[in-house]
Image (cartoon, rainbow, N blue to C red; front, side, top):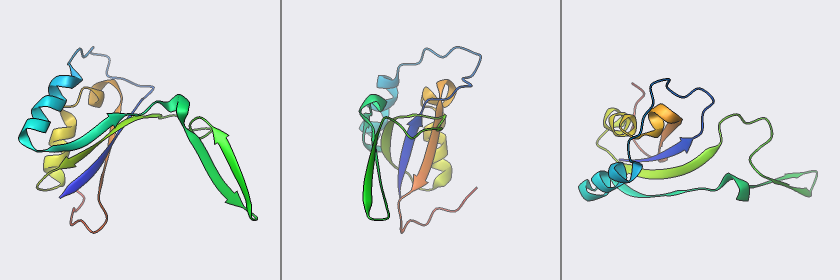
Length: 112
């Protein structure tokens, strides 16, 4: 089953420094077929859009008041949610930031 993994900045990184190389994580998972795609997202290029009362409003940057900025994403292939969580826990940003996993709609993941 497929999972979207958001890579987020976090104001409370692990106090134990982590100098793991994210490229090693990417290479290992790409070779195993567990990482289908992913990329870095520049928060300075974010644009928000909403429509209220028929009027479009556009804002620059991440949503106001958001404390966790999305820095990137990965699409993972995992047998179940536990495997996806294990994969995510090996990503350097699990310690330096935060990762959020969501199964694709129509998936059969159950919370654990």
